[in-house]
Length: 157
Image 1 (tube, rainbow, N blue to C red):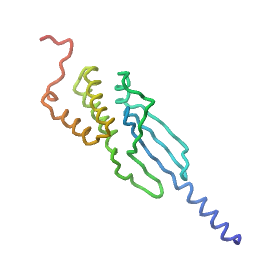
Image 2: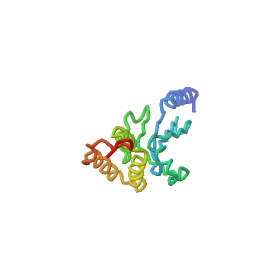
Image 3: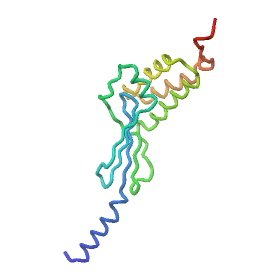
Image 4: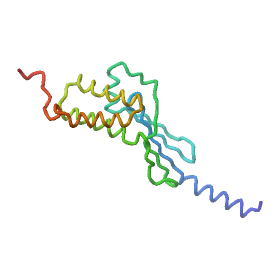
């Protein structure tokens, strides 16, 4: 091998490696936590696990084993090879969980009711039933009592 082809191959490697930065995000089907991994040239350089409001609510129950994580990808992107994320089965799950908690808070539900609704949503997530989770959230949003403000404990009958 001559010096020119070797230099060309080295230059090509140096130019393409920094461009191949991958970003993959996962949702934990056991708790609703989010994990983000960053890869450069196929090597993981960063891993970060974040608690979400949903995961904090269900963890307060004591029934959820946070150590038994079951990570499913919901987003990935490579800066060079893949400019857009493919549509994963769990793509909408983080948004659905955030929206559920925000909706329950907006309805001024009690903490016990919020936890009960989130634990019910967690059952769908544990079963990896993304469609069931979506239907459950939609049914809550369109239920008759959703239109009624929650009764506060200080209100009298």
